[in-house]
Amino acid sequence: MDSSPLLDVQGLCAGYGETKVLRGVELSVSPGEIVAVLGSNGVGKSTLNRTISGVVRARAGSIRFDGAAVEREKPSTIVARGLIHVPEGRRIFPNLSVRENLDLGSYRRATERRAANRNRVFTIFPRLYERQLQGAGTLSGGEQQMLAIGRGLMAEPRLLILDEPSLGLSPLLVEELFALIARINADGVSVLLVEQNVVQSLDVAHRAYIMADGKFVMSGTAADIRADPALKRTYLGL
Amino acid sequence: MLSPAILIPAILNGLLTGAVYALVALGLTLIYGVLHIINFAHGALLSVALFAAFFAYQALGLDPYLAIILLAPGFFAFGYGLQRFVIGPASHGDDRNMLLITLAIAIILENALLYAFRADTRTIDVPYAFETIDFGFTFLAVPRVIGFGAVFIVALLLWLIMGWTDIGKAIRAVAKEKLGAELVGIDVAHVYAVTFGLGTACVAIAACLLIPTYYLNPHVGNAFVLIAFTIVVLGGMGSVPGALVGGLVIGVIESLSGLILGESLGQIGIFLLFIAVLLVRPSGLFGARA
Image (cartoon, rainbow over all chains, first blue to last red):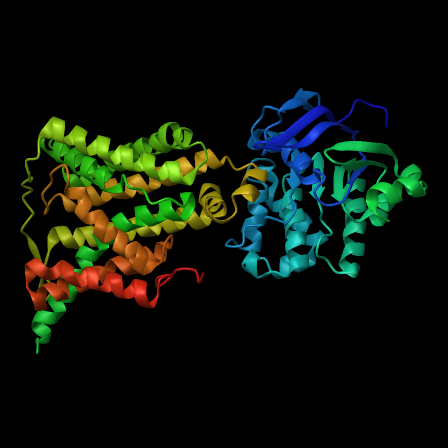
């Protein structure tokens, strides 16, 4: 995978008000890769995602997606390019039906293939098919996570950012989730997986970055990081 | 006791008046539900729309009901522009700023009307203003019946937009989950502006329905917005069905309390109800439980 990267982040700084959160992040994701970003709570993982997807403004540095600079673009433009962010906490539309949630997944992109993609999502998540007319706010936590991922898939992502997808899921569902991530990736979607669930993330990812205090302190192949006990102890608390 | 022969027409007339109240409230509740601000400019926009309908009739000879075709899209565009290019940018993402800016717009619009047209009260004379329809048991004024029908059509259209179009679904999505909406590529500034435009279009249509039987001056919109605000609280802040049902209820209450307390005291009933609702069910009839 030494082709030019799909996502290329250089020297990225961002924060809220006086608070600096990201302090010079360097990251790349190549086409077809699953890249994991690991780190404990509050080190800036979600801010990184929000900055990449344009919700939080970058203060310095560059974000290139598919060769184009996107660090000054609006979230809607970034979505249109195929960079889809499934946020932490799901952020589904509780007052809309399951089906309407999925339809809005293709609000900006792949709109003309909505019906076909909806059927594809229903094949992956039969549970959503059964509940398509139900209000999304009435779903269980696991079902809401399925809906959030399904909504992301509706836009035919080129790069899918998954922010803490395993949070709050039962161990069985977590198992299913990681199998699903591998399956989505096998269909040609690059994945940036941001997780606290270190062991399973390293099993599914090709490469991983370890984040601490707003920057990456380590990166390498998933196999190398898995084999480094000191690293895991220091930064991941294992 | 009051005989049914008096009571039933009073209730029917209340429903007809209430429908137009509901339309004004609909615009207010729509904007509140999505932007989470009380649009203080709503009354002033209604006054401007009444003047627009007035001059469409006086200068162009355009019947108020036909003027809807012109004024509804015109005021949609005006409302869209106000939110997109004035209220939104000037508020820098702070809801309190938005509130103050709508207040400023209200003051500017009202004073512009005062400057241009003075405080005189005006009316138009449409030939059908005093025509009635004989329903057998009662007579109802033609303009009010038309108004009721028009509000019904507007509510139906709005329901179709909200439920069946992408922009309608996007409006509902933004109302409850702004970040999620941004991340599926919904342009929130655009959705805010569309919502403000729809609310303003509601006001323009209400103006066209009112003007055949009502008067206008630069402050007239405020009286309606006070009632509309009561309706929004009664129906539940941000609830569209609440605004419709609330509008009809308020119309009937005004009509009945006018019957019992005398015409000039009719509005007392509305505000007594307003206080009662706040005491007993502050979230309103259709409001989400806190």
